[in-house]
Length: 122
Image (cartoon, rainbow, N blue to C red):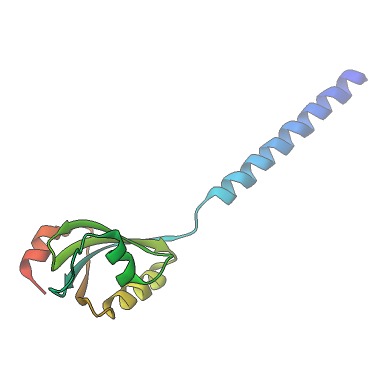
């Protein structure tokens, strides 16, 4: 009888651990993220367009991050990342386009080469 009770205890513990692991995996699933590659045309008075401080300042939203990928002082390809679905990502792009140092923002499609896009001009 004691052996049956022990097996029952073991089964209950294993099931509880399994449920705990499933809950941990579900909690670890990150919410939807936006990630967009952008071509920016910047004003010539930008002192250092590659500076993380400048990129953070033109975005003005701490939930989103701009990462420099390529370009020059006035033409830049950056990666926008942050939380939310596409609509929130679009709102961040719209906010970015209102900065006085940003003349133009173009969302690059995944198959588009940044160099080709920037060479064609705004």
